[in-house]
Amino acid sequence: MRHLIPFFPKPAFVPVLRLQGTIGAGGRALNDAALAPMIERAFSRGKPAAVALVINSPGGSAAQSSLIAARIRRLADEKKVPVHAFVEDIAASGGYWLACAADDIWVDASSIVGSIGVIFAGFGFQDLMKRQGVERRIQTAGKSKSFADPFKPQTAEDVARIRALLTPLHDNFIGHVKARRGGKLDAKADLFNADIWVGEAAAKLGLVDGVAHLKPKLMQLYGDKVRLVPYAQRRSLAQRLGLAAADTALAAVEDRAIWSGYGL
Image (cartoon, rainbow, N blue to C red; front, side, top):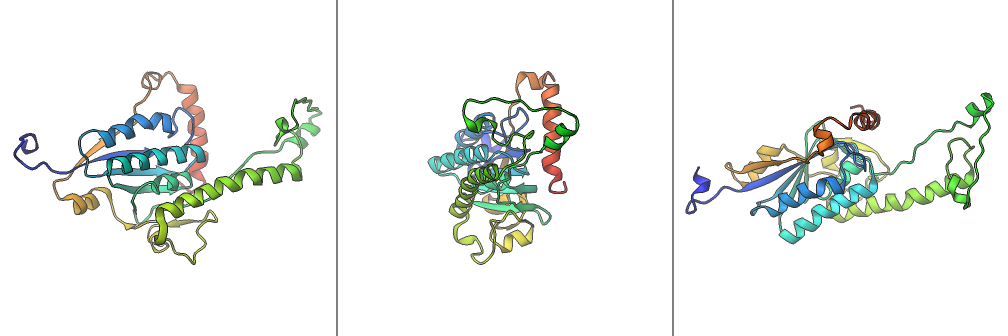
């Protein structure tokens, strides 16, 4: 009760934002629109000593990763509040993009970090269609509307256009990491080929600042009496009532595919 009495010094408090799951536009995914209220509240209520991000994400949408990270940085700069990121199982691809929004990044000894790259994946069914005697009929207004059609053979032009899309996305990701990690990065290491690293190895390369866990590190930084205040993403009414079952099931399959790519 001491923190309620005006003439007693109040202990520092740190809002803790959990960013868990894949990043994208789906109902279950992390995205800027869904996270905005939580992030805004964390930086705006009272005078936090810092904001902590607990990250457990294999990545997803580059645009949503960028938007979320930009919101965190804007508020941190406006409010002059430091941000600390703590990685649980994984901060890969877009998950690492989010982690780089923090002023420092801490991991568990077994955390997976990195995957600074971009991927375009799909399937080709043209041979299966031919064997089944199915003819693909398609008309477009604009030759690019059938770009990367899975029922047509992939062409050299398709590959070149995919590369042209992926390269600027990769450059944006690299630019973000360099801007946020700066001189901490090992200048001699090839960090941007989508490799992943574990715990101490990531720290030695400057991708993270070291091995540390949420509560002990924040107690070290802000005192033994620091209050950690958890903030959670608000679910929609449909989600709370279980009315989005079909969407949830499909999203779970997609999530499982992304997580399994990292052996998780």
